Amino acid sequence: MDGSCIIKHFEYYSPLTDNDKVLLDSLEKNAKTYAKNTTVWEQGSSSEYFYTVKKGWAFSHRLLEDGSRQVLDLFVPGDIVGLREFAFKTRVSGLTVLSDAELCAFPKSRLTEVFAESLLLCNIFFTIAARDQAILLERVVNLGRRSAIEKLAHFLVEISQRLKKTNADIGNHTKLPLTQPMLGDALGLSSVHVNRTFRELKAQGLINPCNGHVELLDLAGLEELAHFDHTYLQEDITGMLEHARELQKATDQRRQS
Image (cartoon, rainbow, N blue to C red; front, side, top):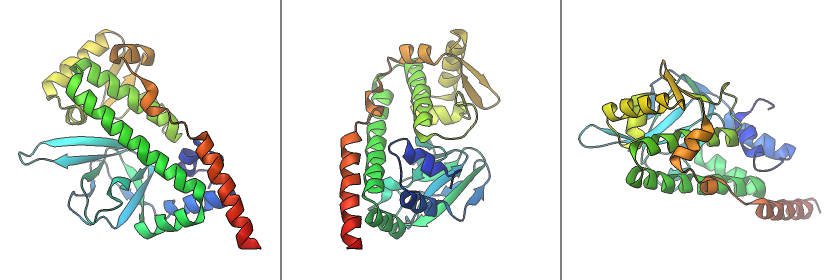
């Protein structure tokens, strides 16, 4: 369990009991390997399972009538994929791996069992879901109101900040496996526009694009350029989690008496 990505992610929010770790570790069993650019599921397919990302990167997307693609979100080791479809029978988006990856599938019923066993984990799950909603809201602002260079800078800073929260063991956190076509689909920019914006950021010494990766050379400079406001990534749940721990302790004592 020491190498569990999902445990590392959840420990960012709170210390975990041994039972919490066992419950989370149960969601990372039977990993399946996917080669780079493999589609794990299509939008409209059955949503019976959630997935945890054990290794590699993945992204969710919607395919439009004209054949174009909108990238919705990125997922790294420790992330849970599919929470937005908790109440739906079919997938509202597709999922493709951005690099060679390992994903672990588990049925929706298993998540319900985890909620029943641990109030703390239930609260952290909802915190992560709320954070994902905040990220989508910020993405709407990014798509609609920022210039191309601000969009790209903002997106790169956001991904870097999110990696710190997942505690993902991916090596260099400033070297991201993000291609120009994928970034264009995420930001609503043409390939030509993305390429021009990349050159501008490189000329300013902020990034170094190379071989399908983007290296962040000056994170502070990117934040300043994007007018990045960390508020939407800064949860304040200490009191809520402490209350959950107290309630869990009382529940466990009642079960034992």
